[in-house]
Amino acid sequence: MFKDRFDKICWTLLSIALVSLLAVIMTGSRNQDGKPGGGLGKALERQMAYRARVELINKLYGPVETLHKAGNKQEALLKLDELIRAYPGEAHGHILQGQILHEMGGLDEAISSFVEGVKLNGDYVDNKSPLSRRTEIQSLVDEGAKSTGARAAANPDNRSIAAAMRKINYLKSRLAGGCE
Image 1: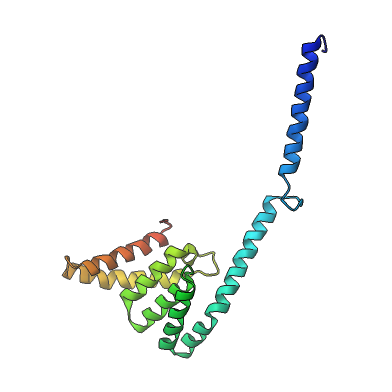
Image 2 (image 1 turned 120 degrees about the vertical axis):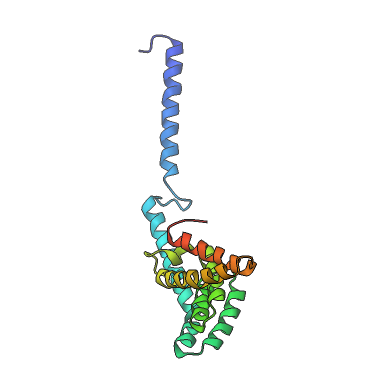
């Protein structure tokens, strides 16, 4: 096995490489804090962050929900406008705005709001999400496709109707499982 000097050097280098590899593997499975890292810890962190986000949404948009349930839809929309300006990357405001506008009879505006919300966060079309508004979006798409489709057939050159149909089709594709 150790016949000459070359063999001894090769075996020494191989053992150094193995020791180094083990050291890298052992230190690679730890976080910066020195705690063991793992997939379970990261999954737990993601779940906790998601729950915290849901709680924040409920806290921020709770007054709007209260106004909406009390029947003060105009005040709820004004409060939503403030929140949408304060948190432009948050989708929940757009979803609530779409819901209220749909109840008030503003179908095209409601569709636009839902599209903005779904573009910002696709959890609203996911059945498994606590934020899911899939049934509301589905009913809006069905109603919008029926009424806007009839208007598009009557006025095929109208660009605003064509834009509304594109938004409805976008929501249909997201409901069917498509992505952006």
